[in-house]
Image (cartoon, rainbow, N blue to C red):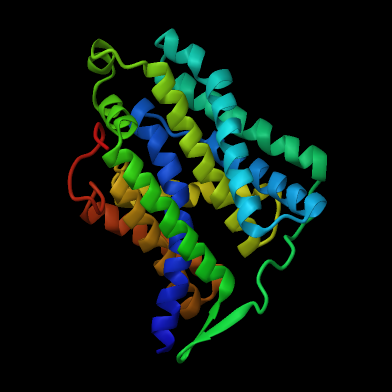
Length: 291
């Protein structure tokens, strides 16, 4: 029973990693570069959520929806400032990396200059903080993280696979020129994709802030999402989901066995060995140009 409870905790953590990985993978799938500004969007959105909650005492649901909208708008601004001109000029892919890293640092430093390095904490949203489910004692925060993540991921999958917008995004990830010939406005599709990614990053940022503490270094969790997307199969949407869940469960069990200090070491070793054995990731196929 104890290990089953660890599994539940791992799935809750992994669901957050999956959201980060999905936001990261959406951009990689259409522009083929790693968007490191995603971490900056997570940090800024998490602090905006803190301000909204502190000033207006909103309900948890209202705060989450507003933060997701703000994250979407912020991501669109990042795309317009940092990548639109590069894409129109068909610039070298390395310039995308430089621009994304620079924008991520700028966003993080805005938070540092505004809040310094002081740690902040969200108010206690859920009382009591724990609930008993049969023989299990589960954190309400973990349950909410898992539940909301399932809803968000399900909604994203519906959009990607059951709507015209989703078809356009998946087609764009395969062949930009063909999509343009079909009369699809590529700029609009890319902008909407960035907004979806930003909304996912905002939700993940709030969850990370609630689960840990609110600090400008929250952007480090974007590397968890990147690792999850690589484990799942870089550029693969379903692979990002599986990779995030695997990484979350792995971290919880390793922490329980060896302590938090050694968790990054064993996680890295596992990832390295896994990719040596299966370099294409969990998805089981080469997905560099597919969603």
